[in-house]
Image (cartoon, rainbow, N blue to C red; front, top):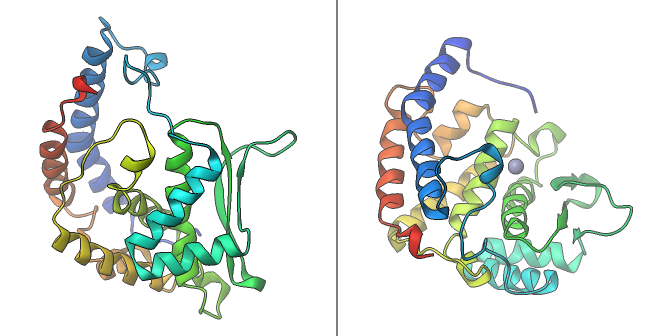
Length: 249
Ligand SMILES: [Zn+2]
């Protein structure tokens, strides 16, 4: 999980782009939150307080969330339907908090059974849905890479793994609107979504057989190490965020 194919200069380039293009937008979002919840100034402990009407919560029990997940993954693609049914049929999701259970959430892989395994501690917040879609991204990737004989190929390096998990959160974005009480509508064109899915699937199937920069090339992603790579994405993100009337939520 620790192999890498980039150097200190490339990381420095990435960090300077984060400072220049991501930090201002993140600060703007915090400022919007401050206005939305009616405070004079924001402290770190105010961050979890998102809406005066109450933070988003799941509309049902954990069993209901899993059932929504089954429905969501059956709609998303034939590959995710097969994957999620495979997990459920083998009882490979341990999601409920219970006495004596360890904390946290993660995905691991039981190679002997070619079976991904998701561990979580649902607590009745929207985080339950985030954790399930995130870990399902990791699980889907390793499921798609289960054919590799070399164990090191089942997962790529950690920073590449987070592409699979975070992308799954975005790819399932229209669907969690069914699950949470606060929803936003992702207006991405169906055509782009199909292409995005094809690229994502190709990335998942590479597993850990390639290095980080080789994997982002497979997924047709802009390199975060090259000047301008982050700026172009952040402009679209900001435009999308600006069209949301968050004070009405
Ligand atoms: Zn992750």
